[in-house]
Length: 222
Image 1: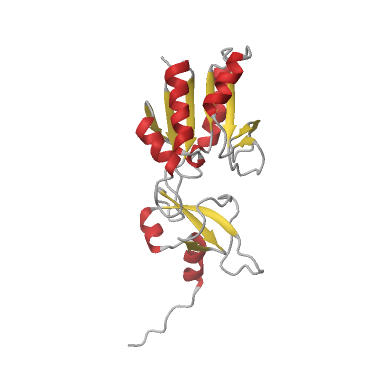
Image 2: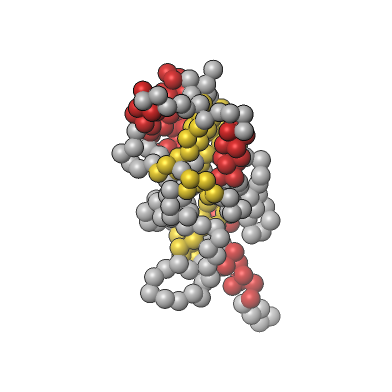
């Protein structure tokens, strides 16, 4: 029986790498699949991992229908055994429901990969619907680490090294784009950083922690 799988973890936990590995394993057994993504860090219709691996993918726009795409492909004589859906947190709840329908009605395995919460620690609508509908939910075992060394559980958005909690939910960036609190320029440098809950609550990023550690010691008066 086909199933809807949801693999989740924070940024930098290897979701896209696992998506590529999953595709490789199924393709190596003669199965034919389709790869989808949206808002990939590369800025193109590619499934890319931070290890440098890439694969061509189909871009999921807000108007895209998984159900229509699969039915049209099968009607025209095409073959689809599985779907790889990366950045699934950005899919709409309706698109997640289409994926569940593909698994149930067409008996096609669906493997969705995405993060649970945004930079405000709130569930993405797509991820929330996946939690509600997925046959299996798998938390990735590769633990991303906060700058302090503890297990990272939250995704933070930074602008010039400072954590922000307001703004558009979807702003493309990456954890590789490390910024500093002293960077100048007319526009803010947007990046992402994974933090433990304590430092996410305190809005203490790696750049801010470094700035504090380099500050002169207070005089021993009082």
